[in-house]
Length: 125
Length: 125
Length: 125
Length: 125
Image 1 (cartoon, rainbow over the protein chains, first blue to last red):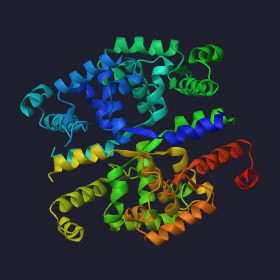
Image 2: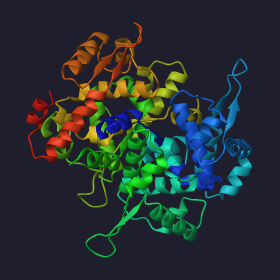
Image 3: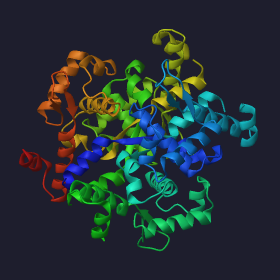
Image 4: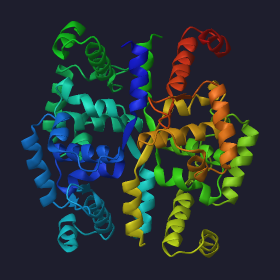
């Protein structure tokens, strides 16, 4: 593959847009860098129409194993930033980031009210 | 701040575009998730015209301390994916991701030639 | 400039993220393609910290003259999708796309209520 | 739909990343704003895995009719910035923007050589 072909391949691959409000505030949602990258991969797959990537698919792009990936997803579920939605049939599950956006809204609302983030998180539940 | 104002604030903040070739191949460049996120923050700052964010600024968005941040930058320098460019005057340093893109090109070239990534990395030096 | 340098230049230039809700609904806001592209250029400049690009700067990237550009900005002001905000001093004007996002919210609210867009736009005023 | 639901819907819709080199140089490729927006829609559909949107689908998002859309696609084919690739079976056509990226590379190469763009375009053929 010549450089020109590589370049065209890169352009065709496109980019994943990460909302800056998420990039600048994930720390306040008690997410660490590994969790944030996992969210990014889930988001990136969903933009391509792959709504329920397997742990193998996710770990293929990451520096962690499929089993560590499963553990990380479990933590994201516990932290309530990700949900697994059941489709009408088995095998049609999908990840939803709706809880993540909700938490981010709650964060901004609480900051606007001058509350501590801690309080807001507790109230939200 | 009402929900509508939050929403408008979010839209005004915009997004940072992460090239998918980077998102899908950073692992092959021997980068882990923390290092990748740090690169993302450096890239995101540069898109806004801030070319040399301090360790404090970087760690404000991250789950690690400024000193851990410094350690992570040092590793990125050693792995030769980031460079610090000296401006004409002191105080005008800036991060350059040029080595990162170069490594990524080398990766694609080597994969096209059917070489192992290991070989390509060695040759590149 | 060799292909590899071009490629690195391209990656360093980055991308501008256009929210899909805008891309898919500008027509419903009675915007045509020329107006939408002008909005995109204003948005793209703002992401780089240039908040009040001149008609010359805008037309340099467009297939229309600076004077046609001025006419197009005037139309965007009349359609109330763009505002010019006055800074504390003269020479500190900036474009605001806040009215655009407001109109887009109003559009979604009205569609949710099953109203015609026409009604919503009138109410909004 | 309440504002919070709208906001979450917007975040889930994501963004389309437009490479800045394209945004800043389409004029030099003799493309006007309508043609550029059509390219953007084709690109945006392809990012979602829809590789051959119909004229109706394209015009649904645009201020022009499906038949004007067909005319505009024809012009993009003539200007050699878009190609239609035939799949192995009929009904599997897809738009390719490879010629666009090639033209953009040629533009940068020619500018680097200090040539006029006109010359480069002619040579490229």
